[in-house]
Length: 311
Ligand SMILES: [Zn+2]
Ligand SMILES: [Zn+2]
Ligand SMILES: [Zn+2]
Image (cartoon, rainbow, N blue to C red; front, side, top):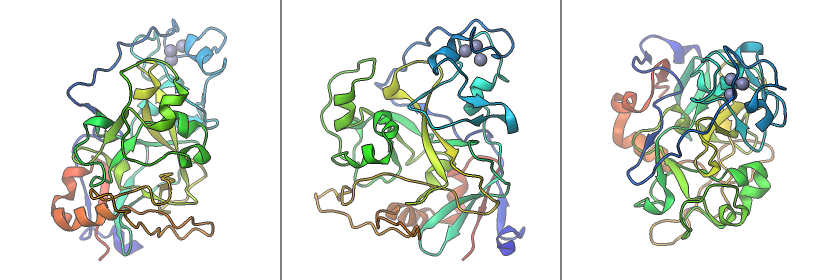
């Protein structure tokens, strides 16, 4: 793998740093006004006083070790937001601190692009946010032709993969109007909002599926409390050694991905896991890579990410 790091084949990309390009909000989508925060000063340290800690079950979801690590996967993590009295260094803003690890987008023989880290990543560390354009699922022009859509269905994520497996498919179903709160029934059938990383996503969109992933999806609320518009963060599920491919479980239903004509898109899985469910890979990713070519991939990759062409 050293070859992949040679200066001729690897290119460091400059530009905006942090967790990739930030979320853009599509026309017609309005983010809720920021909710009231905690009254802590400087940093939140006492969970008995911090109103945000109270929302997380009377304790902070993170420990400050290694710059902040999530103690355990939660239904939703309530972070401090713009109305809180604490500063940017607060432990309860761990997912807002941007990319901490040197990530590399590299090319694989079968799976198209993939992502790995040059650094050791400790379990519970935030990796990156799934960024892109925040839109109503119903407003997507062509769901089946875009493999970079992340549906914000935190209730399914909360229930774990079993929950996500019950989803009827990735095609949107009609949903009622915007409504704050945890409406289980509605979210069960489809996600009202999604993140389309097709044209404006960050590095998260290059992270492949695995049936035995080393990352997991965590819904995070920081500036408001509408779970349907939660931020989507990827965290390390294990201690991850350098250069191990980063993966998470996309959690699609088998045969749920369809072409525009309604035919099921056969999506073989190349994750290689012993317990592989023989599911999907991002077919469109490879197609797009052919279309955009390596020369233009930098447009899709944020700063301090390295792109390597192994072929
Ligand atoms: Zn705070
Ligand atoms: Zn606080
Ligand atoms: Zn707070």
